[in-house]
Length: 85
Image 1 (tube, one colour):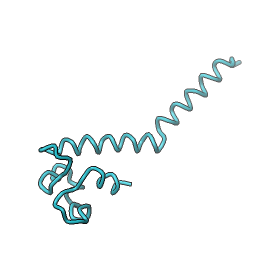
Image 2 (cartoon, one colour):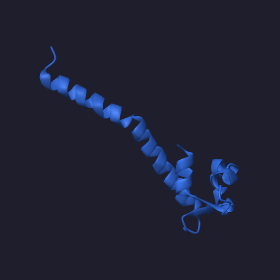
Image 3 (cartoon, rainbow, N blue to C red):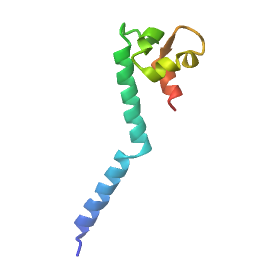
Image 4 (tube, rainbow, N blue to C red):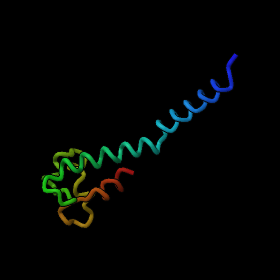
C-alpha cells in the first residue's frame, strides 16, 4: 500500500515535470537560445544585426528584408522575438 508521503512526492514530481515541459518553459528556453545566438552574431555588440552579421543566423539572413520592415539596414533582438511568436 502506498503511504501518504509517497503519494504526495509522486504528485509533486509529476507537477515538476509538467512545469519543466510546459509551453512557457519551452518558450523561455527558445528565447534564451535566440538571445545567445543573437549575441554571438552581433560582432560589434551594438544590439543590432546587419545583413552581414545576420549570415551567422541562416533563418534570419534569409528573411532579413521581411524582418527589417522599416529598411533601416539592421534587425534587433526584439524584432526577432516578435517574429518568432
